[in-house]
Each structure stands twice: as structure tokens, then as C-alpha cells.
Image 1: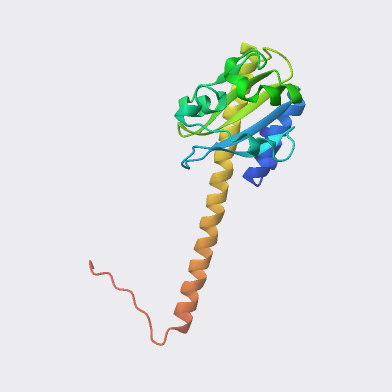
Image 2: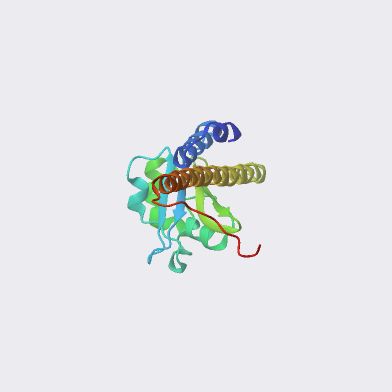
Length: 195
């Protein structure tokens, strides 16, 4: 995670690489990150993934509104800000709506960790395992720590991007002021009314 952040320049690429690292290095079947949208339906928009066929997540129509709490661990994690876990997708009644998808893809358990910025939940990372009850307490702690690093990385990249935008705006303003002074028909003077 830290190595990925050191080389990252774009948030999207960073998120994709984190998903890839978690899936490959930890042996999970699929990892994806969803952003909580504040649209009327309260949808969850997939923004990064690894181990997913194109278009699959978008077809699921995942939501985080109140009506989705009973059937969606993802929605529950986003709404409550708490980690949610499905120990066995084949027997969990909350997974009935997507059980066939899980069977077809070999998913057996899932872990959903909310993503926060300044204590506001903005999304979640979802990790699927091919094994039943795959997430031990120690593993959940490690993955939670990784999510903390991920949140820090996102904030770092956003701060860097804001800094670059501010520098660009400052340069543009300096150039504009320079052009104004250069082409002003009369001399410019500055006065301090308090002196």
C-alpha cells in the first residue's frame, strides 16, 4: 500500500492498484471500491476493481439507501460506517438477491469496510473470498489498517492535486496581472489609506 502511494500520481490509478494488490497478494477472488452517490436512488458507483469482468458491478444496481439495509452489506457499511461481513453467501438470507452471481463466480464470503474522509463515509471497499468464513479477526484488523493507509493515500493525492491547481491558478493570475500592467495606458499607483 505504501509503495503504491509513493508511485501514484492519479487517484483512479492508485485505487485500481490497491484493489489489484489486495486481490493478488492476499488471494481473494475479487476486490472493488464503490463511491456512495448522493443521487435520488442512493446508488453505489464502482470506481476501482480487480478480478471483475467489465460491466458486472454496474449491472448489480447496488444502493445504500434505507430500503437496501436488509439486503446489502455494502449499503449497511456505508450508512452505518461499520464493517460488515458475510460469512457464507450460500446460506446468508441477506445474500439471496445475489446468491446466483456468487455461485457462478466462486464467491463464498465477503468483507465490506467503509471508506471515510474526516469521519464522513464516502464509499466502501468490498473483498470477496472463495472460502467460507474467510476473514479471521486478525485478518480484519490488517485489512482495516490497509484501509486506513488507503484513506491517507487518497487524502494525500487530493491534497497534491489541489496544490497543483492552486499553483497553476497563481501563475495564471501573475501572468494576467503582468499583461495588465504592461499594457495599461497610464501609470498605476497603490495607496494605503491608513498611512
